[in-house]
Every structure is written in structure tokens, then in C-alpha cells.
Image (cartoon, rainbow, N blue to C red):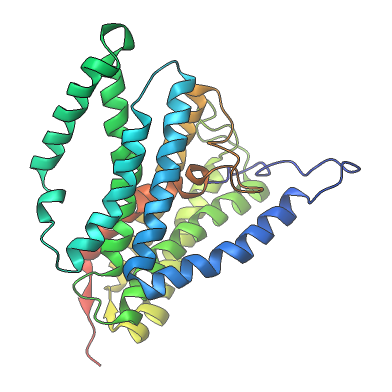
Length: 306
């Protein structure tokens, strides 16, 4: 996500032609937002497919960053598994007998298979322990965490397409609000750096501002969107806490990716999104927010009588 306190990226120098960074961001948003909202609304294969693509791209970027450190993760296998996880969750919700695919047993078998492959593909000189560990972590960090978007969309309390969409959009909206609030407040009021060694642009004011604005936004979204549209709600104190905890998760997810990039000495996870960098740069906060939101909603969500 965008650092607070400094512009996300410098504008293209005048005279070089082409679109400015801001124009690229706007054009990409105009194209991407309808696709994302459409996939959330239709759910089913559309959402699973979008998550699979995002998982594969995010895993590819993660392994590229890891390779900058001189490591050799099993990138092809990791990317494939990360992409298959949302599809496996989708198949489970369709009623196919694939629960075994998502069980701890399969996770254990995956580790065994990867270690076995490392014997031949990496050997002692290929740092097999490091290779397998990074491969498994990349799958969990990308595909596994993104699966929570599908699980939120089909939460047991969310009856009907509108309710499921509202529940997932609540979390996605808070991710965007937290990120935007941190940037705006950090730019206008930020003086003290938060953790400059990890992310120099982030400020204490931006972090606190994101928490406060997210808390207010969460209460408003629950009261005026979730309750009337989904017949689901949270107690007022829980609605406020939900915004605070989700914003905390968003900021920690952002810092976590910044830490990875800082260690590898890269600015962006890739350059495949015009004006934005890479997929991981866009979804880093979301990766942490989705499972946190799922756990909180499981504990606090209550049906609201019509």
C-alpha cells in the first residue's frame, strides 16, 4: 500500500511524454474497480478466478523478491499451489468432496513432497531447507490469506448475494479507507516517523489518523450499509473495535511487505500495474485484514430482524 507522509511515487518528469503517475493510477482504478466489484457481486467462479489470478501473481512477485536475496524457492510449484487454493475453496462451497484438499493432512503431505523434490532439484548446495521454507511461506502468505475473501463472501450468516457482497465490501472498504486516511493524515499532519528503518514515509500521525477514521467509518458502514442491505450487524462498540483492529491489520500488512522489500533492496514488488507497482504492493494490507476480519465477524456478527 501507499506510504504515508510522502507521495506514493513521483510524477513523470515533464517533457518525457506519456501519462503521469496520477493519470495511470486513475485509469487503472477506473478499469479495476468495476472488475473487482463485479467479481464480488457475482461470487462463485468469478470471485474464485479473480482470487486465483491475484494469488498466482502475488506469489510470483514474492518469489522474485526472495530470489533477489540469493535464495532459490520452488517458484513454479508455489505459484501453482497458491493459484489452486481459492479454486479448492470454491469447489468446497459448491459441494464437491474436496475437504481433504484443505485439511492439515494435505499441508503435511505438501511439505513432504516439497522436501522430497528438493533432494533432486536443489541438493545440499541449493540450500534445500531455505528453499522449501520460502516456498511454503509464499503459498500461505498469498493464496491462503486471499482465500478469506471467498470465505467472507459466503459467510454462513450472509444469506443471498446482496448480504454476501455487503459483508466482503465492508472489509475491502475499510482496507481502502485505512490506507487512504494514513496517507492523507500523514501528508498533512505527520512529523514523527513511525518505523523509518522499515518504511521511511509512514508517520505516527498517519497511523493514528487511520485508526480513528477507520473506527468512525466502520460504525457508519455497519449502521447504514450492512444492517439495511444484509440484515446483519455489530454492536456499536464492536463496530468501532472492528474498524480499529482491521486498520491495525492493514498497517501491519503494509509494514510486513515493506520489510520484505527493504531486506531485498527493492522499491516495488513488480511493475505490472501502471502507476501502482505490483500486486503485492496493492494487496499487502488486505492480506492481513481479510483473516482478521473473518475471525472478528465470526465472534461479533449478529443477524438483524427484518
